[in-house]
Length: 389
Ligand SMILES: Cc1cc2nc3c(=O)[nH]c(=O)nc-3n(C[C@H](O)[C@H](O)[C@H](O)COP(=O)(O)OP(=O)(O)OC[C@H]3O[C@@H](n4cnc5c(N)ncnc54)[C@H](O)[C@@H]3O)c2cc1C
Image (tube, rainbow, N blue to C red; front, side, top):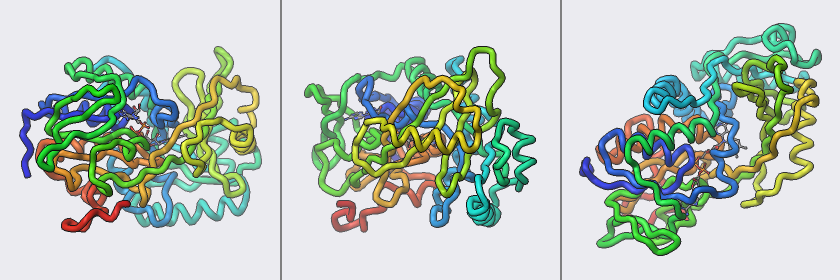
């Protein structure tokens, strides 16, 4: 069903996903209001490392997600350039590729399996000996066994990206209601807007729920329309090089250290982000000594120089995990209600593909082909109650 192009859309949530959906919707001529509090502790976009790494994060059984990730990654340069041209602000996109390394022989064997998978998927990588890895990144530990370069796996700075998106929304006159949404308003089975926590109503004929892990807590909807999203805790450390020092690493380094993944992401300026734990702990926002110790232990095994850096910040974010760990995109069983949620470990990577897909769904009524598998109503059989419970 084609949607009214002059209609009013309320986007609930202002992480990377909500902001990018709002931007693309405004570009298509829709009247957009963003409903979100200024700050929610645990917001994933404030904490994310910003890796755009479908190849180096490839996992068996996740091939469709990797294909979506590769499509989204390939849209990033144009997405970032367009945003920068519109706002004059950077997104921190770095296109130096990603080096994946192995600490010991078992880790190297696991990387060989990953490379086989990447070959089958047609994702480019270049196999490297330990010495070749150190030629690319001289600060790597002498014991690093080998690895591969993923030349197309890049990184962005999510805080710069969200700041630029906010500026783009201001420039396009998008209204922001700085409150949590409490409920979606419906009448005659259709969406009519959003009620905020203070009881104010924001009328809209389409609503996009993009509130990360908080999406499934928004009321007013029949059971099962929004699947339960679970918080997956991630701890990161932000480290700083001393002023005037050359960079420790020049591209993202991901490593397997005795079977445990760890990454170091350099940013423009002095910062290196070190991450991340992955903990099924509910909505626990405490940084822990154990989490920091594991990150530092494994990062130090790969790049011993990290121990010289200043600790600027420890952060915890909540990845929004859907029941099948795949994102939930587009129209739902409730007319006018769309989801852009459940992006779990890949929300920054999937931002351009998600925003374009939602803009298509909001204006044309349907998701583009590449996003259909991730349709928000895939838990529904189309006639009975959705199976999400
Ligand atoms: C440690 C860590 C590292 C990560 N690294 C990467 C990475 O390298 N690459 C990658 O692609 N992804 C990464 N991710 C995943 C990525 O951060 C998430 O998938 C992505 O940020 C999800 O974005 P979002 O906008 O859906 O949710 P969030 O960023 O969580 O934003 C949720 C928004 O909803 C708002 N909100 C909350 N409650 C309400 C309410 N009731 N009403 C309205 N608004 C509300 C919040 O204020 C916030 O604006 C990482 C995540 C973590 C935790």
